[in-house]
Image (tube, rainbow, N blue to C red):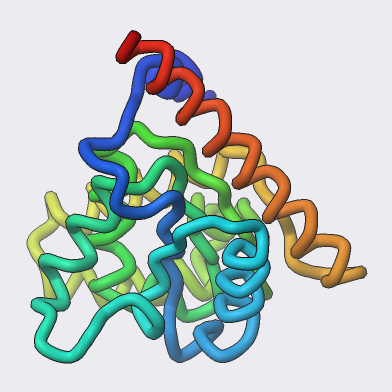
Length: 190
């Protein structure tokens, strides 16, 4: 199963310019570590980044704020961690992200891309989906599995080794995607 998202990306533009990037993550796993590091590194590049901890204000409607940010972002950084698939919020956000057609940068933190395809029935994502199967409609669970599988084929970053270098690579890639998208949007308005 290949991924043919590049044709979608060539004509995609966000509905507004609210955020340059959106970070999707499982808070309990990475909010205070990898997620925060990526957020601050992107901010240091001058980007307007939606990271729920720093972007949602008191009085904001959380689901509406997240949905608006997903639709407005030029690029989505999705951090896959061991407990990501257990989170209904993460799965719903991933579905919305895929529907936008915007570029996705997967970051694998303590997990391999193949884990998202649930080829190993004893893997952590497969076990999470065994729990989902008893709580949610079969169609919804299958949509979530399909979303994870689709993203597993997108080239991303495995968070290991020299983490400082990796953070710089992620930020550089995100900035390049945003710069290209803004340039195309600007050319489209002339």
